[in-house]
Image (tube, helix red, strand yellow):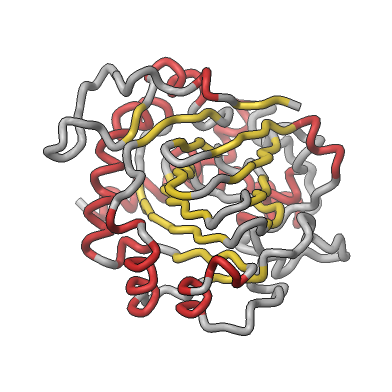
Length: 317
């Protein structure tokens, strides 16, 4: 078991690219460039931020946002077990929505308004549909785009999600395909983030299933904790969760508000293409090597994907 603690946070918000937050003299994020280069897309690491108290991230404003948001609001009771993967013969619809987990007997707006006692957690997805939140997302991306492009070029499809949780609620074990920063605004939470590159944690078949859009849930057992890092977040802190690193979250004794910044890149596109190609090769009876084991083989598998992307780029030009 490992713990990601405050000693790996950025020091005093100083970075090599020297940008500041819009007009305030302060950056929105404090990133250590050395830590970013060494760990981004590979290992979880903590950062700090200056978004606590931001007017767009307060409960009254989030109630207003929930009333007009066009994306479906995901919300569930907060007392579900960590493991929601039933281990059946197929893994179709292994998602929180597909499992139809129990919800509070309230509407999403009512749940947010009563979050202190609702015993629930919610995800306001893609809040950048609202111009004010889109501007905030753009400002945040500006601050990490340069170091992220050095490691994983081709940033695209950025998204901002807001998570609102009742005291003591649990988010089940799941994984995301995207690069991810989770920033804590109010309350506290504990994350257990398993090593998605370790075959003992997550077999290639599960990743292939995820990339077939069959759901984000992953099988959990307590032995995975020895292959995980454990992160405590309080307001003003954040954590990078690498793509396909399964994790679960335990909320603290107070209402929690967190902002998730997610995006895709050429790296995630390559990963998706390799797993999809392996899935197809397996269906025709072959036994392809896992992505990363044989770089030359990976390059050959990537030829159709590379050709398609280049033709698409030529057509767009």
